[in-house]
Length: 197
Image 1 (cartoon, rainbow, N blue to C red):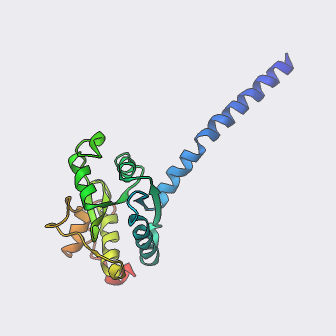
Image 2 (cartoon, rainbow, N blue to C red):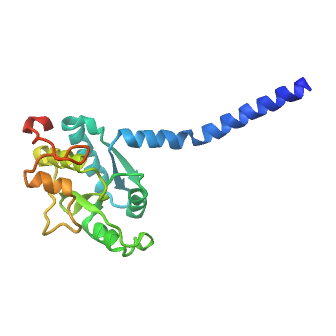
Image 3 (cartoon, rainbow, N blue to C red):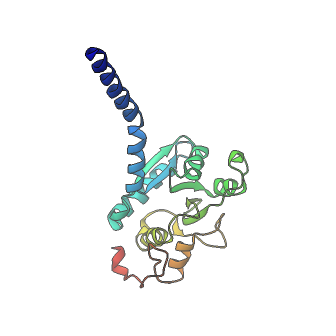
């Protein structure tokens, strides 16, 4: 009887270990996402990966608290899936893909019309996020790219006239010289320029 109880206890412990370890990679991915600003790029849209590396390098140098990293999916559809499901906060899309995702047109019909916002432009590509991307974070990212992004080809603040999708409110606040939004949503005191250095 004692042997049976011991065997059952060992089985329960093994089952708990297997169950716990099966979810460990996902939990680790969740923690990693919470600690890093992951920039989604696409193998099918070749220019996005080196562009993402440049952006991440610039943010690492001038906004290290963002802990920016580049990740790469197979195609823009997969990036849209990761963005809309909250697994990525920012992705690089061409202007045409951003507009198609917003309107729910091919190849993004599965998502339906999707509200997205532009943070910053890089020629024909845009750094795209969801509307719930924190205003405070958007302000800091856009401020850093505006101040230090001159070395990246085509880098320019998103223009409300030419942007394929609406511009994020945090980006608008920076462009208009408004105070930086606080992490709680209330306006904070204006940040000095050297804060972004």
